[in-house]
Length: 292
Image (cartoon, rainbow, N blue to C red):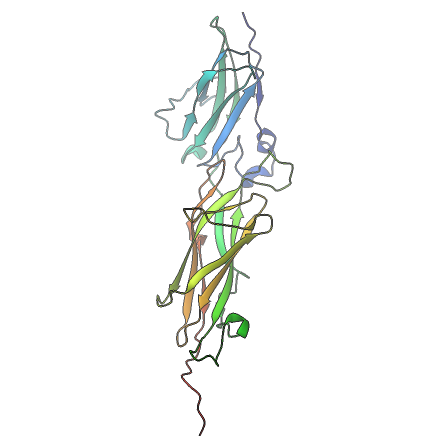
């Protein structure tokens, strides 16, 4: 009979036991909503394997994956190939943080003999957050820009009040550490969709000029208007252009939606800080200047 020697490898295992990981999702301390991969190596080639979850370290209290709503095991069964690896992904759902779980890997050879190993999982409430802010954060009101570089031209045959440029920040908080790279502070890529609006709704000339990250460079939207940010950037600058409208103030709002982190698929945890506003104060109306 084959001797099934199992050695567990978790890419994020070391980080999971670090006291500094409470602010990010890891394989052993996953956020609710996160997907993490669990891998074992050193398994006899040709052995069948199965991942499952129990409530206790001794294997008692085995959960039915189809009935338990707190997690979903993706591709729990298979046959070990020549690389000696067995792997699965697990989605940790809402409610998982109320329990401690034990993820098991059981391998069975052709003669019917089995061996198994487990790891303790302590899910956490999701703290992954993408938020938007003014630059600086308390810069919530400003006068319209009236420099010539902003397009303001009082001498033009058709009066042009020019354009005000605003800058906002979209910031990522509590991203998942990317152990696949050697860069300190590197976390998985993240993405969002920006939505601009203005109140009162009388100005159709409002647009995003650029979205730029230090490491990501100038970003380009995909077909769904999603912007993907390199994981080494914790924030990006969103530059917005708003046509000046004499005689009225304008409340410009930047809202971000469909936020998420790649690989773990973590959703945004706090919708209260998804929107940011900036008021452009009234530009006085001047119809004409004449002399006699």
